[in-house]
Length: 301
Image (cartoon, rainbow, N blue to C red):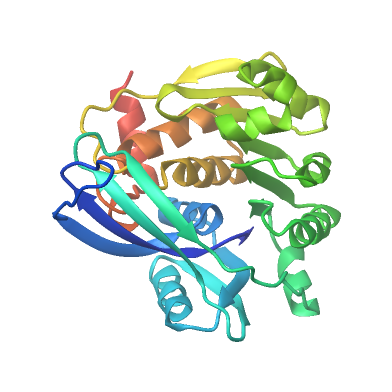
């Protein structure tokens, strides 16, 4: 079982012909979807198949939380929400630019309480083969990671932004994949050098470390193969929606890691998953299954 713990929010997405400051635009498309690094990654894992998925997290006591629970269930992800009375679930307004599929996002998230883990939650964590976290609730992430590691499971960390204290998670993680900004924040002395950032994660005890570089690709290394290797992204001309692309990369990598795929192969598999996803609007419609990804990779040979 793959368990995820992190922020969840509801995305309100509008597709516009162009996005310029201080202008008006008529949306050509509108949809709502599950958002947040961890839950989107879990939906990718579920779509690839063969692994049960569970999301743990704190939400508001509102209709948006009900919608998110229903959507996750429909996508094959079980949800165990801790509801904060009187609080609102995190929301994001997203504008997708039709010209290149780029997105502008504004997130509104109230200060929700930290997760209170019950004995039942801990038992679920002990059953996890892999835990995927974003580190947003640091105390909760530390507890979850320690529980999973003590039971023999693996931990994957999506380091989108480096904040104070998150370095405490590194020694507990089997996999750390950072964004360009996350890697620079973790190692500001190497802010422009992803290869050195990867080496820094390995020195902190991480087994598999990478820095994603958006449409360019990913830099990755392992304890067994410590020389960072750059793997370019697959070129895609028909890009319509990049919202959540990084989250999908994490989910596909987590799936590949959990199923025993070597790290460099897992990174290519994840990049193929993203290449397929960004050619469709929305996480739900765009997520490919395992067979589709493997067919895409075969066609690249």
